[in-house]
Amino acid sequence: MLAALENGVKGGKWFSLIDKVYRAETLKAAWQKVAANRGAAGVDGQSVERFAAL
Image 1 (cartoon, rainbow, N blue to C red):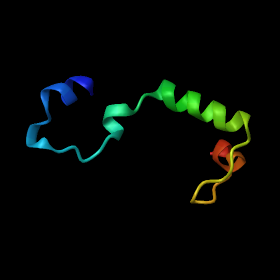
Image 2: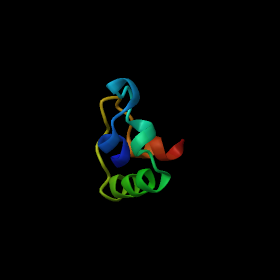
Image 3: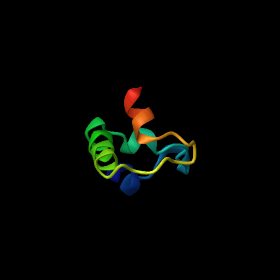
């Protein structure tokens, strides 16, 4: 991602960041923090407990 920022992106636009920032370790660490503090449901209303059940 940093190289793309420095060198530019073909066409000059990015349409999605998920493929540039997604890492399983990052998502797992975030989930552990949310679960540990019993995070509130998001805009979709899904609770931590319901998400964990999936």
